[in-house]
Image (cartoon, rainbow, N blue to C red; front, side):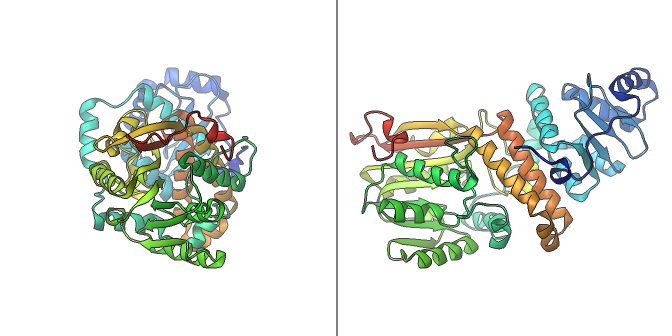
Length: 430
């Protein structure tokens, strides 16, 4: 997707000084001894990131650049307070300063964030500092009351807000693009079909869905695959929307949307599915989720977990956890297995849809920018900048491999009713 800098960013394209990149390099070569204390701090920060081609401009007119060749993007810092936060804890205070407008990006925001993520991967902070920051930046608890508060802060912003930039069915999870040029609507339908094929749904089977969003998957399973669904969610806004859609489609007798915590799920099912909820469960509650799956899935049953994840254990970006997704944690594959391993389940299939999520986010970011004036009128400029950074940062994280998207299919360990080949995943009806 071609990003329009005037839309994705808050300023014009990056404009180096009149001396050009070579002049910037010469200036950096002769100025270190005369740089202010603030500029020296910026210089050390850039060095820790591997000297990316990012030009840093301070409020006093100083410019710091240590990259080679033209600057790809630039950052303008408005005051000492913004700089101090950036130097002390950039993962948290970069986002706060950007949202307030005391930090501005010149150039392509996504490319800038990709360079920062790649630099961080090459030079992670010292272990001691990681432990200190980890202590202060622990995710918010996902107890029953804590989960309700965490979900309200994100999903109950209002259905009208999400309608501005999601697809028609209001799916807020990774789409599946059979071809890169597929529409977002087509890719989200393809994702739901892929999930249903992986679950091998048969007419009149019973399905439990944990964390159903606005109900699109539950309604798709019911109307397209003829199953009966009980779908659970603790977001009042989403549940009300889903029930309304079920009435419109006249399937309320086949799909039940229940406003309740996943820990209270009871009854039995042929298939258990959770798409985009595990990130909000919290690792401390994985045993609770596994216990729910074990007590609900029939002896010949199966299930699917769909979750944002990562390669190595690490807390979610603290700014996103604090300002966007309180309580969220993306597991590694090993950690995800903690949900299933204590119970008699076997993993049948694992797929990583990382690049599909990157493309999904490109669509969301473009649609959000197209609707930014309406968002600004309702929520204000700071909200627009916060969500722009969240979507752009997520896109950069999936593009660089900082985040992944795992789909894990499992079944009862003793069940021999399992696919003989993988053809059923891609040939509909097999």
